[in-house]
Image (cartoon, rainbow, N blue to C red; front, side, top):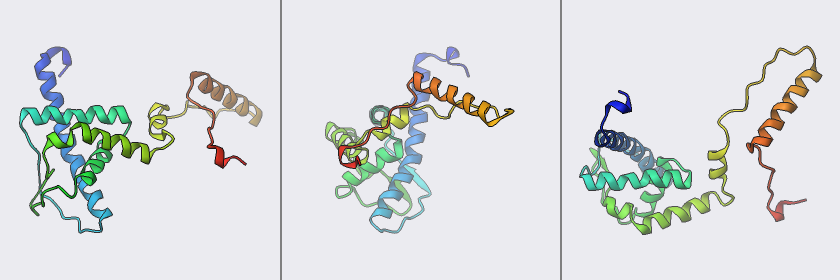
Length: 179
């Protein structure tokens, strides 16, 4: 379907449903990461249960904003939040995977601050932002050259264009790593 055919409320409902499915998949990955770090057995969950009230679904959209703001993926975000609340999390049933704690707690201001601090610890130089801002692939170069000099000139032009476009940043080294 084209977005022009859907009303605004239908598009929002589709976006929420899509995000809900993404959260279900990411929860499985995040739970596995947390249990592997604690050397616990990783069970297979045939069913993933998430809160489905409208208020909780809208609160889960905060995670989408946080993923964009902090330049991390949803699995990393949920891993941070589950580790933070591991001691308060309810025991999980072997047949179903749940958050184990309310969505309101996991989308609170305190949770956002925990995510900010964890991202700062994980990426002290802002590597996550640089990776998000860099282009996905280098410009294509053709290999129909008659000589090595011609290929070097073409490569130099392409790299100069990328540098002018801001895709290549000068290498920053921390003061204690300088020789």
